[in-house]
Structure formats: C-alpha cells, structure tokens
Length: 282
Length: 206
Image (cartoon, rainbow over all chains, first blue to last red; front, side, top):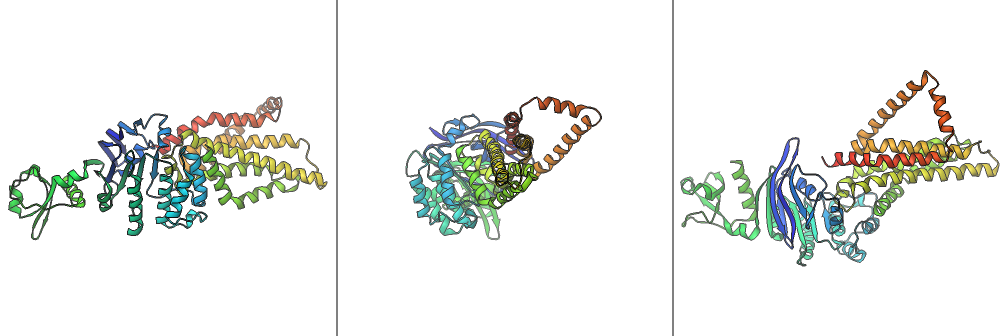
C-alpha cells in the first residue's frame, strides 16, 4: 500500500500556482519535502489533509481519497504537527490531552503522559507560557500518542535550537522503527532531512523539481569543480546546475552522463537541492 | 464533537471566567432590567467570542487537519451558543426568583413568557450571526453582522411603520404559545447550519 499518492495535482491562488505535482510515497518510508519559503510545501500539506481543495488532480492518503466525506475517519490514523502548534494557548497540556482523547479513537493517555515526561513538558502550565520549542514538542506528543500510521509534519524544526531539533529528530526515528509507519516532513533545513529521510521531494516556486530516493540522489549526482572550458565540454544534459566563481566553476552533474576522467566529488543533499534550484533559474 | 465541546468549555472557563461574572451581575439586577442583555451577552460570548479566540490562536488551521468534519466544527458553535442561552435562562430565573422569594421584588407578570421570548431572540441572533461569521471570519463578520442587523431592522421597521403590519404580526405571534418561541429559534438555527458549513468551507478552503 502507498502512504501517499499525488497525481497531477494543481492548485492556484492569486499570485501562486502549485502545478502538476505527481509522486507516490510507499508505506513505511520517510519523505522529506524541501523548498524555500513560499515554494508550496504548506499548500501541498493542506491539500493532502483535505483542508483545502485542489483545482485538478487526485490525492490519496493511506489509500483514501482526501476529498471523500469519510476521509475524516482516515485522519484518525494521521498525526499532524504544523509550523506553529496552533493550540488554544489558555489551556494546559493536561487539558489538551483530554481534548485529544476525545478526538482520536486510539488515543493512549499513558503514551501521552510518557512523552510529556520524556520531553520535560509541564502538565499544568498554560501553553501561552511555553517556549516555541516546548510548543512544538507538545504538538509532537499529541501527534504520536494515538498510534498514527502516518505523520505529517510541516516545518516542525524551523526556528528551534539544535538541541531541540535533535530531540525531535530522535523521536521521529523511534516512530519509524515500525515498518508500517510513514512520515512526510517538510523543512528548509536540508541537513535535518538528510539524516532522516528515504525520499526527497524538492518543491521550487510551486513546481516539483525533484522526487527521488535520497540514496539514489547521492549516488547519481556529483559535484565537479572545473574550469569554464571543461564545463563547456560537458554534455548539456549532464549539468543540472552551476555556480561560476573567481577560480572556476562548481557544477552539479549527473554521474551517468558525465564523461570518464572528470574529477567528481560526493555531494551533500544541500548541494543537490541548491544546484537544482539554480539550474531551474537558468 | 465531544472533544470540540470540551475544548470550548475549557476555553470559556480559562479565558472568559471574569466575563461570566458580568453575566451574573446583569441577571441579578432587581426588576430584570438587564436580563435581555444577559441572554444576548451569553449567546455572543459562547459562540462568536469563542470563534474569535479560535481565529487568534489559528486553531482553525489545526482543526482542519484533525479528524473533525466541517459540520462538527460549525455545529459546536451553535451548541455552545444554546448552552450560553440556557445558562442565561437558568441564572436569570434563579436570581430573579431569589429576589421574589426574599420579597424584595415581585416577579413581573408573564415573567416566564418574557424569559422564553428573550431566549428566542438570542437564538434568532445566533441563527443570523453565525453564518456571517463562518463565511467572513470574526473580524469581518462582526462588521457584516452589524450592517446586516441594521438593514434587516430598517427594512422591517419601514415595512411596518406605515400600516398595521406590526399589529398583524403581534396577532399572529400571540396565537403561538410562548415556550414554543425558543423551539422555533432552535429550528431556525438548525436550518442555518448548512449555510454556515457552506460559508465556512468557502472561507477556509480557498
């Protein structure tokens, strides 16, 4: 079964279009959705959760059509963390737990209490007195306490200090130990995704520039630090993006199309994303 | 639905506790002068004001991702509105009754009929305000409601001012037993729920 299926989905707002998005995430995998602010990550997440309607195309999550009236039942198996916690701030974690207990049919209070303890979250302090990191951890505790099969996280680590980010990533790694659990995590912190993800989707100005297995991306692409003349000699299709500097050219090349003899270096995921974006611009 | 009700009740208790005190003071004033305001105030507090808190905290953005239907998200505000009206009824009857028992003030003739009428007026207010607020959001909805009430009030006043329309209306309504009024208002509310759901969808799904 696929955790997520997106087929030729488009959505337009005044001044922004998400166009022809198409990908499939198999069950049990972690997808990192990368893109700059305003690339369409949150729009895509809203579409996937049925919070907004697509202009065209089809979206299925956990084998259910997101536009079907009974998609609400499927949401019972999805944990969500948004870029802000969005909880009523005058409540505390204990009251929030009671609300979530009535929201999710498989809510496990013991698991929730365990997360509050593990993440050092006070039960009776009002959420408005929580730091941003604490709010995000609370959101994560809620998303993980109802035996979700899919986690959808929209920029959960944005604006957090490295310690909290690391703590959150550890929890996500724990979550995915069970093979039937999938994760969609959006972020513009590529290093976070590099640690965690099986697949990478790169959204740029509303277009999906890339959807590929992370390991394959790292295998198929390479960085070449070459001269202008060497760049000109490379087949056009091999060069995915380039950066000209004082001392030569840095280019992201497709290893499969690059001629033998060109010195290639292993790229980071961030290199791949940045150079793909540059290639699109050019 | 239970979870949404619980959330709104928690919000009332944590955020509007002091405002509830105002409601009690209104309904405790001897002679029941401010009792009509108690009903309207309670209705506004438990429905539209709660919507404003949801908007401020952006709860709506999260709620749309949780296993709640649009209908549940809308209906809960109607239920809360009617709980507010019921609370106003209970508090007003108790406090005005207390004055009567102690002999300080006598209950006005037709006191219970008047209470039913106030509850019905607050219920009709709820039926008119919520669709507008769901469609346009709290900030715009508040202005639209005032405009809407002004236009409707003006139109009704103008249509009855010149003739005996008002007396005809009184004749017709006087044949209906007063306790039925709140039921009619509740039916009107139920009838506007689909309108609110449609307006809500249009606003949040754009």
